[in-house]
Length: 565
Image 1 (cartoon, rainbow, N blue to C red):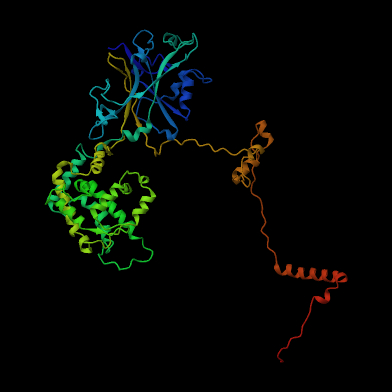
Image 2 (cartoon, rainbow, N blue to C red):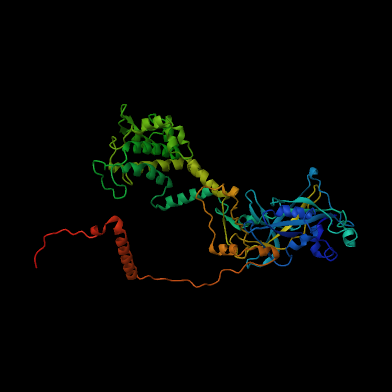
């Protein structure tokens, strides 16, 4: 039996606890507030007014039953605490020699469940790195698992919880007078709930690239159309855009001879089509891509790839500022001038200068090129068949490495990908503290009480306190706001403010609020108002007529011809 052991944090020791099995189990402290760590350290150091470190017992989670740990977003934080002691009289603290490679940490273990969802008593360790990432059954829970995730712990000196002579038991264990005991604490990352969720590999242990190649081979053997996924890229980037110059790619109806007004110019369109063609050759037919700018002598005579290369050499376009060139020479020229960066994945487009782009954007026109027609570009037409045969030949020659390098790289990313699965009941966890001191065996504590990790949207989660600070009404503070900014209070708040009075300084309550009162709804008679207005008007007209002599002008009549009656 080791002479070193883990125990519950020393500040909570008492006569009943020290001899019970609970004394060997680390405890969880529930904290609230974003400054929880400062508050905890101040409590341990005796800097909290009116409290001693033994007040930590008020925040301990019970050992019985599964306790739910809430997220930091809910304003709740949890610390695992315990004491590392020597098995001697008085249980003195064990000093950790960090310089000698000794360290203290803790682990999170998931309680194993049967297929029916019942706990079996076993524990599973979490491996966070490497191909074995996930949960693994632990043969001996009292020993660390190879590669198990370790979470850090830190020491703090807890001051005496009792005065001298106040508690004889406390004096025996250095918890009285000026005694100090070391307590180790570690933050429990409840936010890792998503990481600890049960997951399975997407590829079930197989190589995704090999699976993809096997799938393509099976489709080819079945004779289904669209057997080569590389032809999808050829059709979408080369054949269909080229066909759209002559006809609608869906209905195959011919375009009108004149392009519609406002349509995009075909020269830049031709440039990008040529660049896409060169990029397709680079990715899928490297032997043809290497032979660009030559007569094709490096490609085996009579091969399908040579047939495609020779057919491309028969196609010529008219360059506005130079004699006609065949298609392979044009692709070689675009490659040498770095224009492929405009269509390559991950390439720096800024490496192509505006002058170079403008020079080539209006130089080539594929529509009307020699030895091309609508029939040449139709689905399953000659160009499609030439590409399909060349790709099949390339695949047969390269064997297992026929996939384009970018595709191989993307499929390789699937090897480490996992997906979450539903494992039934909410998993339960226990925490254990570990003391490593080579060459001796690690000292592993007893498990803490079982806990579960609450999701972010948990209906039982406490609400985080939100403080809304009202603006200061001091003139100095109000000057910080721009002109025109007003402060509006709700009617209820304004009513409360109106009830504040001086008597509240003498412990009087708020003044009575405004109760129900009688209001008035009035109506006015327009007829009476009009009559009174006319009377008042004539009074003033007659009175001021002595001054202005305006009464003769009040009514002026002009004769007009009217029909007699």
